[in-house]
Image (cartoon, rainbow, N blue to C red; front, side):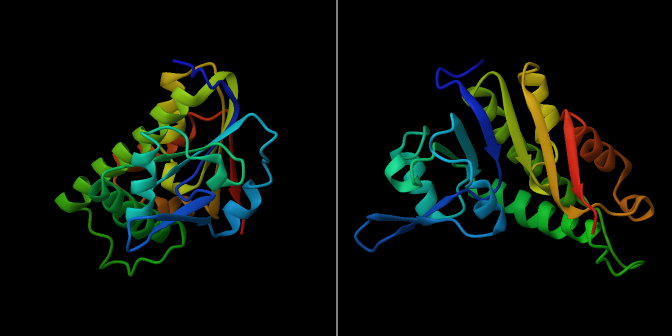
Length: 216
């Protein structure tokens, strides 16, 4: 399943190093992505045989992906980096990003729930969890397609906690790392999650060869 691109290093994160704004005339304007993660990982320069996989965050991004026909974005827009942006269905993206990553996992790891009134894990939560699985699966598939034999893959943060194991199943030859950019919840607080969801998150990250965490 290795790509003909044969990238030696791959980065996966929700937000990528470039984003697009659509003008009133339909034109697209590329601008550098924001945030500390983008700034840090942008040190992987154009001279490296690397591909960055990220999600389309808005209409401009999705239009750019369609113009690229699902492949790599124009390097003129990315500062010479090879970037594959994923046009994940907007409803799936919203449920995964807003519903699970930012409204459940962020709250668990930062111990923000107003217990014992929260959290509530109902049918809507399960719908959103299915979207989170689909979101992670899209990343794993794209990484498997872009990676050369034995490539190093750097998967970022709680948005992509399931991706390491999914990718491992597709490409057991890869060297996979996962880094959580938030402190991990204490065990007694993490147990607020349903048992099957907690197990999926843990075994997902354990699909990586190396897992790293902030400690404070």
